[in-house]
Length: 68
Image (cartoon, rainbow, N blue to C red; front, side, top):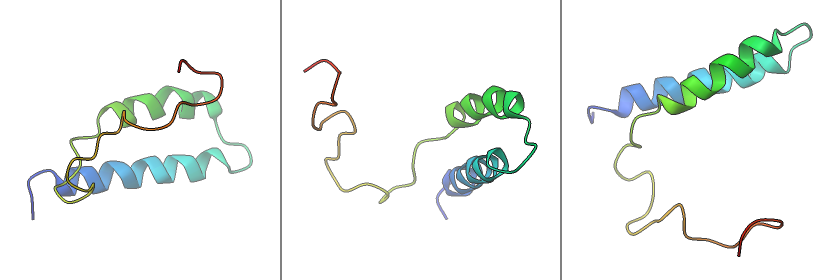
C-alpha cells in the first residue's frame, strides 16, 4: 500500500462521517464548522491513480458568477 493511502482514506472517511453528523437532529453545527476546514486541510496528496494522467483540477469551465 502506498504511504499516504491509509491517511487519505481515513481523512475522507472522517469528512464523510462529519457530513452525516451535520445532518442529524441536534448536531452542533459550530463544531462542524470549526472542524471541517481543518480536516479538509489535513488531506494528504491523493494516492497515485486517483486521477487520470495530466489531470489539472484548476482546468475546467468557468463557474457562473465567477471570473471568466
